[in-house]
Amino acid sequence: MKPLRTPRTSAIESSLPVEPDALQKYSDEVRERIAKKAYELHEQRGRQQGRDLDDWLEAEEIVMREIVESGH
Image (tube, rainbow, N blue to C red; front, top):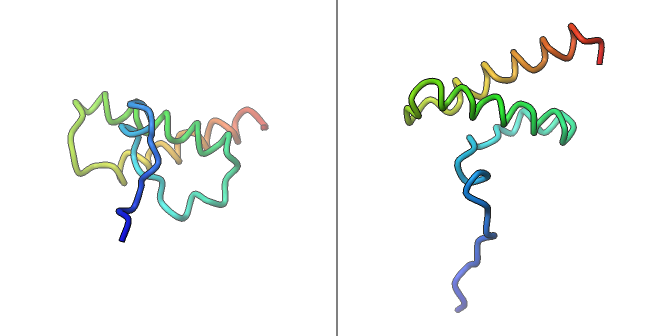
């Protein structure tokens, strides 16, 4: 039996938090904005492990607020 192959990702992609299933409702652009913001939060926190979901949810709130405030 052949071993399973995993797709290769860049160093940046592999360091971004994992996207929760609930975010599949957003466009690719919005998901990308949330992922980048979550990574910024992760770095600001000193790259603490185990806070991925917290960072993601906070990033989602920030990005959605920005979208609503900008009218886009």
